[in-house]
Length: 460
Image (tube, rainbow, N blue to C red; front, top):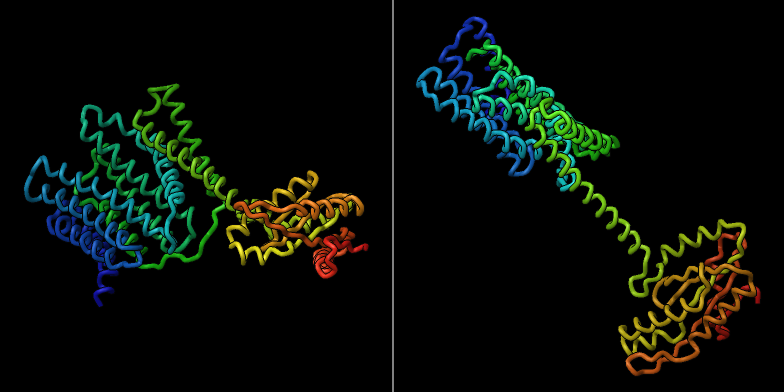
């Protein structure tokens, strides 16, 4: 029952307040101090109960933001009806200002799609949010500044609140674009848009001198917050959505900010200089994002290389060798041969001297084989003491290279002052278009091992 009341009571009371305003058009203490602010405080409870708003930080951030806005509203209306205090408006504005950091954090957590937000996603959201706010500041806020000349405090808040609202709107839209669309994200966008529209409407009415406390337009703030509260009661989308337009949005935002800076430099009087702050911030964030992207690309390239490289010898591993094998099998022009090589007597060396010595032997074998094979050949370690070689050439020349490879092991390895001898069995087959070339090479290698001849060619 409590959940039902906190969910629907604010909307019902907003309707009651709006209808009452039609009957009582002038400021009234019950309607504008008690009922209006009572709805605001009830919305704090409603948002706090929307426990789908993210982790612990998200659950406290948004209720805290609405609570600060409610405090500002209470101070503002209290000073109008009860105690006329010139500092009350400054205290109220301070509460409104303090609301925005909480709102930024809370909305970001509320827009998450059930997964941890990465630094890259935060940077993308910040670039879009701050960049769009720079553009909005230039074209939406600049026209109202002449009306506040000579009043430093009024000018400060005339700039600050709309910019903060634009950042809020851009933040919600950017996170919607960067994540999957859901009913929650739609309602959050609508709620923040209504709230920001109420701020801009208040600013415009203030400039024209038509605003008065208790105006029916004040309910737009409550309506926006009520929609946000309702949004948080809907689950976050668990579907991961890939946004192909994301790089385009970021690129356009960065381009617009660069254009604003160019206009400020070429025509200093055309746009207010404060627009340069979010524009420069956007470009710096874009530079940081580009640096991270380049590092990620390099890391990905290194990871792919490591995934296809044998860590011990530095040769291609079995996965890479099989991929190269498929490529060679599709070639129709150059004759090529496949050699599979298995070291003889390697296991007793591992058992007698240990795996460290065995690893040194494998590295030395790799060096001898690499010095023997012609350029353009593909030598790989397939696992354990088995090697593979793809070599271009006719049957006779590739068979000679197989014999030369065996000859490289005819003299001992000196490992830690120990002379160690090993041999190799090599299976040699030519590529002839058949798909079973690897199996044929394996059979030839075992034939060489059984016959103790070192090299066995399929054409023997």
